[in-house]
Length: 409
Ligand code: HEM
Image (cartoon, rainbow, N blue to C red; front, side, top):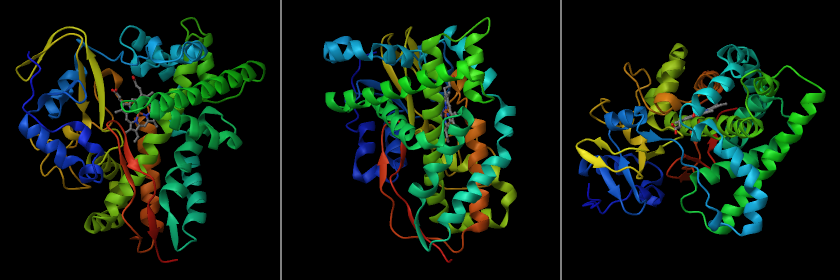
């Protein structure tokens, strides 16, 4: 297929002020013009239709092996220093295909079980209550800084057994990892700084794992080490890479869901009231908040063998960007997609992805968010937005830097 594009728009316009607060009109325009188009700015094919995104994510002809830092991009000595970290990142399940993906995901899933997550229910409620005791005592608060940042960080750190005094540090490191994933527009200095942070993150886990070998404990890290020590085992790089994946994935995305979600509720008073009066809809409400404005807006794959999507032939070697946010707002699949409908019945959104890489942490993210939102609905008194949030919209992640709220004390 010739890579000509009649579209003067680019998905990169999500960075523009016009779409930063709400990128969905951009996605609609792209889908209407051409749901499978070549984006010269991204040097990738971009898919915005629900069925195309699902089919492609399920196709064995595309590969998730897309984390690549070429030796030539970095100063030689720095590359050498970073090599072990790069190797660990490349062994994260997110970037692997079967059979390696199947094996590693299976081993991590043995440690990170639905039972272990469900066991956290009461404790998560306690953490939410304790955080809100402080936050809601004030007439005005920054919801992102004071609630959405600490909550998922405390939960995943406690599950993994990271000491609470190191939490701030690992939040910064997981930010570095997110920066690296977002990648596209980093200059050399930014890229090196982010890589350096990830290196420290990995070294930190290396030390923690060494300590656990002397003093075992009953937590997720120990279970992962156990998976490392069993017959079929995670090797050192797989263990380190997937520890930082769980920590980073478990933190940023849930933070963003809580912020984007409360903002959506506050700007839809009828839906806020519906939730407040019907707390039993928490589970479907969270699914709709994920669909309406999810934290992960897109992912990508490399084409291994020529494929045909919507009548277009896409050659092996091409990159395909799967716009999950656009697919979850496809009017061919969702009635009134840009409306927030907390009790939406059919809601097979793609906020957690699709296929073999479907989010492993989805049950934890849903549990935390259900507890957080139901508690907020009970405890917030007449909340008001003080000002519009500071949005940051990337190609992959979408969230806000701060969300100032006032309520009656
Ligand atoms: C609202 C919160 C979350 C959202 C929206 C989200 C979204 C996603 C998406 C879209 C993917 C698939 C990416 C792809 O196919 O390229 C993914 C994968 C993954 N997520 Fe999440 N995630 C969330 C929370 C979490 C949590 C809490 C954890 C763990 C503690 C987690 C761990 C993972 C892992 C390990 C993968 C890789 C799975 C694989 O490659 O097989 N996520 N997530």
